Length: 149
Image (cartoon, rainbow, N blue to C red; front, side, top):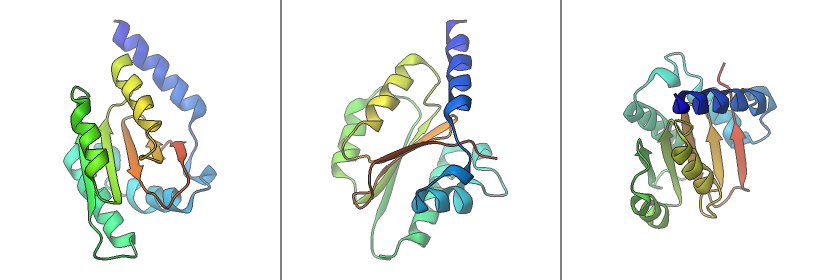
């Protein structure tokens, strides 16, 4: 029962602090939301593998350097912090972490907040049902809570 209370409180907190696509001031994040996350099939309804595939395809199409490698990692459980750390350290210049249910419990939310403060992951997008962290050295550090319409 405690977990359900935590999730309910986290969701209300998310609703109060999140914004729609119309309040996003970052061109990268706005295009990502409008051209990838708000697709007709619904990003929410896709499996984690398909979400990662869709993000990778979008980033490859929108990236100006075609030869660049884009890496992604799906985290469904937060058990192995060493795997996460190794990925962050050794991944390509443009990479992302897809975190399923970052507000599922206090442990996951604590790790989500810890990863957001990483100096190498400078863009975070919290969609409540999934969190996306980007390694984009050319961009200023920004954190977004976005309600998909």
